Length: 297
Image (cartoon, rainbow, N blue to C red):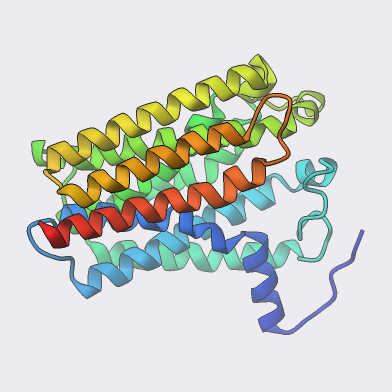
């Protein structure tokens, strides 16, 4: 193992950002903006809302990833695929992760307070998912859907920050976004989990690929993404988005199909392309299509 050496504050920040794969925020941030834009469809969100929704999203993801790395560090150290990550390889010290996650939790609390009473009231419930989802693979093979639901709370939180409501008939788009993101994230997490079947079985961890096999997991993943597309179609029709959104939906559907072409139960060699690249394109394409539709509309 590599032993972490004291470095500058800048070095520690850089190592912490690498540990939480901060660049993967691209998966979730566009959905926060989707919730924000659709909630403010009769106008535009204020700069205050835009700023604090961005801060809240980045802080929430940092809390979740930091907690995940701490909670799973022993598991990651035993798994050959993850043993070289910064924390199990001791390139980053646990105290750095605790401090980074703690500061992010405080920033998230301030952001929720700035966004209004309802976001602040709902924050403790969201925190349960942000931290608790890491434990679910120890107890249930439904853990993929808990992760999906955790990410699905992102656009719903942004919606609440703008509208200040969640349970009226006009709030249906927030629930459609919750469902779409939940099934989208769950679907590609099912694909991602296929690479750890042997280790998970040995370690006594639970996942759908471990319980039912990679082939069944990939079929369920495809079904999840079909549901994602259906919910996004419903969203566009309900809100009345124009042609740029529907063009974007064609591109999103093509990307999801391509994602499933890339991986097979007996060949996971292109999994990282499917996981990292394509899902980033999906999120950005969907956001761009909604922005374009709102401008055209």
